[in-house]
Amino acid sequence: MFQYDQAQSNHRRLRAMTSIDRPEFEKMLPMFQQAWESRLKEKSLESGRQRRSGGGRKPVLQTTTDKLWFILFYFKTYPLQQVIAFSFGMSQGQACYWIHALSPVLKQALNGLEQLPERRPTQLADHLAKSGETQFGIDGTDRRIHRPKKPGVQAQYYSGKKKTHIIKNDLIAAVSSRKVKYLSKTYAGKIHDKKICDKERPKFPNRSTLYQDTGFQGYRPRGVTTLQPKKKPRGGELSAEDKERNRTISTVRVFVEHVISGVKRCHVVKDVLRSTKDFFGDLVMEICCGLHNFRTECRSLFKSPGTYFQ
Image (tube, rainbow, N blue to C red):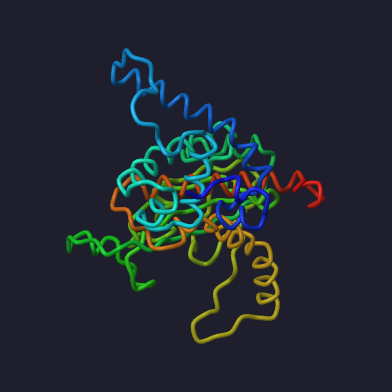
């Protein structure tokens, strides 16, 4: 069985296996413990349990450290269930159980650490106002899925641009903090990025600045200054001033691409999504945005790598 103790002394190995470092793991562990205990209490109340929990065969993942190590390893590397089951000394059925049992616990822990993005478009303005930031970027991101079996469903998830079946989200990030501030619902790949915004209508604080690409042409939230590159006219050329303006906007707007790449450090949202459960694709994307925010906040607090890894 893979043990956390075997990887914690080597920060590069730990980061490769979990996407976070030892100080971050230790910071997350107490909140994860609270979330796990809360889940056990809710489960006991739902089942009407009378006896004290803990009887029967002992699970492979006995400690909270083992559970957090397991679920972070799964999110970062995204192995087949048979592979992770063999790596942790359990059956494939047990691996499936722990994946779906611990994923909501990890989400609850990130929520307790205040790292999850806002999901309610009507509450976004208040959420952004609390941060004090005024410059944001918006972009869409997609993830490949296996081709659905039903022909009608295939057409909904097929993207003509990507030439494959995908699911997608819109993402709003802050320029200064590089955090994901808003994550839209998960939609089938046929829908356009701008149509997601038109459907959800996220609210921004007044006098905000929003950087966007040409895929959001015509999207102008009320009270917000929108900046996007100018398209080249058909059969014509952009002027030197327009080209320089486009370069200036792109140098700022590219940070959104960096944020998306940070979210997709976890292979569960980078590789082809194998799960066929409708809720799972949305759940893992929200968790990976929370993990990115958590890493970004923790690493901004440490200026000296020597002090960070002590």
